[in-house]
Each structure stands twice: as structure tokens, then as C-alpha cells.
Image (cartoon, rainbow, N blue to C red; front, side, top):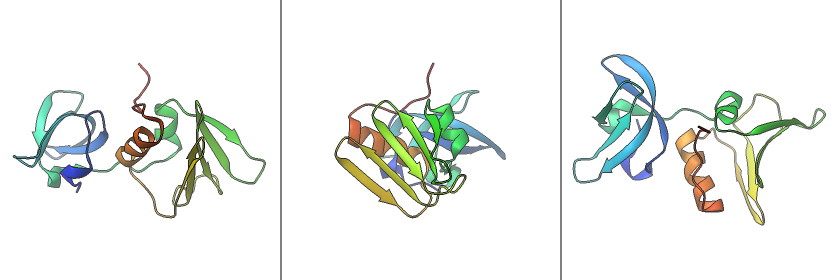
Length: 133
């Protein structure tokens, strides 16, 4: 379940559409109705928080968002997109992340969702993080 207040237009989330899980992109948010319109790849539809879930950040998601991978010779893995960096001390373990953009450094010791990464990227760089066309 996601909180509507955490979502922004363009965020990537998982929705449950008639029992089927789909990845979708937030198109619009209605704080009054407490719902988000999500393009689930088939249609745009309004979903309640109970029907939306985070997609946890992993290597596959980062590569889909256009990050490049650099192995740090047994010291972890660095993912880069422009000047924005994410480092995991252990390959495949995304429960301990360090990210930075210029002087702004942040550390997370819990898994985060793709939508949270997108919002952090926007806060830090002022540029939306979206899948390349």
C-alpha cells in the first residue's frame, strides 16, 4: 500500500488491476478523492492506496531508468546517471544504499521504492527521473 502524499506525477508504481499485477506510471493525483490515476500499460485508471504498491529498487529497475553499472572490484557496485550516483556495498543488496549528487549525500539502510528514488532524484537534481524513451 502506498500513501497518496508520497506520489508525484511520473512516479512508477505497481498496481493490482482486477487481480493482475501491473507496473504503471502516475498520471494524476486527486488528494480530495484520495486516489491516483495510473497508466498501467493497458489503460489509465484511478486507483486507491490499497491497490498500489512500491516497486523495490534493484539492478533491473536502475538499468530500466537509464543508469549505467560500474563494478567496484569487490567493494560494491556503483550505478551512474549523469552526475547522480548510487552505491551498494554488496552486489545485489539494495537494503543499504548511498546516493549523491554533487555535495548532497544521502544514506539509506532500508530498501526503497522506485517512486521514492524518483522523488529523491527530483529533490537533489531538480530533474525528473524517468525511463528513457
